[in-house]
Length: 442
Image (cartoon, rainbow, N blue to C red; front, side):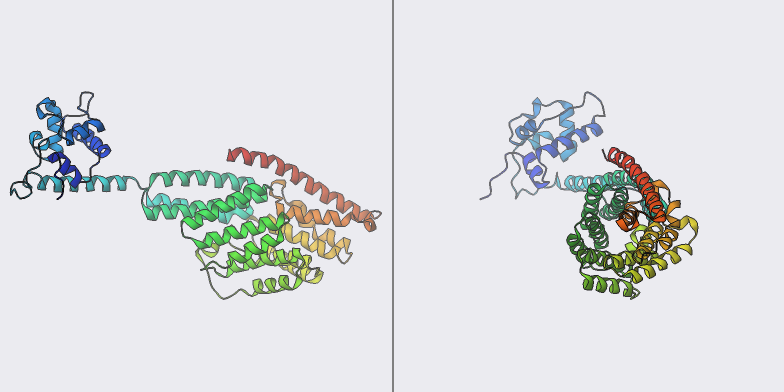
């Protein structure tokens, strides 16, 4: 036989699943309504609640205000609340509490709904944040990496603030996606500033945001960044693995596949696997099914992979497999496409990379004058936009011109010195901005 509760109060609390902490909170809020907000309102502790439920306190020992609050909470007199519950078969047993319990349930539901509505953010604000992330992605190519990092950091802080304000699942998911996109852009900026460990950490954070938001396109992009970092830090096998894993995510469009295949091709070339490099390069150039996706095409910009960037990457892969003719053709194609764009929208990264690749391709044929001519666009790149990819390529030129065969010739020496100055000024700038980047992250 089911044990009879000690008091009606305990029975009603059990029915409403009202534990001691919730009872105390409800008592306090009801006291504010019934007695009025102020310092003299009655209060109760969890220990008091247990004693009330057990019938250990006599009704007449309670203050008038306490009795008023309890009656308002449960809709019946305190003498009945602290007494044993009436028999279940008593026809009057539910009469004094049923309507009140319905009212209290409705009130609790309304309060909870109001709190949830208050714990949301404006859809207009979310739209603006989405526009801000898209704007940063599309401006990225023409921005100094440090400026891109500062803008991304400010966006990240605002997105985090908005995430703390909302409990709406759809808003939370949208903010997770936007935060992940911003983190990916921060990773790209950190990489271009030469801060590889921080770039790797941010790319992994972007991947986690993509996983939490169930947004595989972001995960694929983040894996591409990790592959790129592995390539530039001397881990080409890991770069291949990351690029291939990224291609397994569903929903990727042509641009996404071109980007990942281009990264994979360069990593194969670094490993000396000429056949695999040529196959990945061929696939990257033939990924034209018309398929699009919401990130690489819909947002685009730094998340995209423009034709000139694909051509520049192809020239780098061709150099790695010692195909100078293919490297020159691809580099020329990249430079031709860049020249067709307005000055303000040209990417210094792609311009510098293609120019350097063209110079290396000509040096492989001992055409020093042609190499010097190819490097003409390089010298106009500002110091704060001489990113990692460009510096790695110019470092290769400097190393090539340091060979004994060129030491006695005037033009190679002058070209080597100029490249050295270009690299030195950029490297010192990277060191100072790397320090600033670490301060921003602190």
